[in-house]
Length: 82
Image (cartoon, rainbow, N blue to C red; front, side):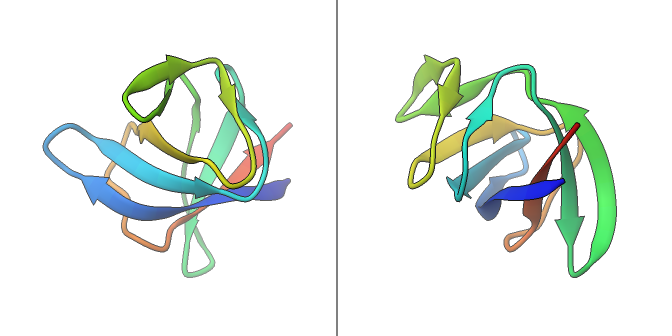
């Protein structure tokens, strides 16, 4: 398990997290959301958007929009699993 990004903003009406990536993330990857050392939930990445365009993957330095199954707070870290 390794860190791939951090939530910088969350839009609760549409369940979308804005994530600054430290690594590569692709549609189909399984990730775990962790806040203050506490595991929140796991989910599979269903879509990635970069500047409102759908992408199959994004890499380090990209800022992406990510639909989440549950609400997350700013500062929540995202780890790729498996």
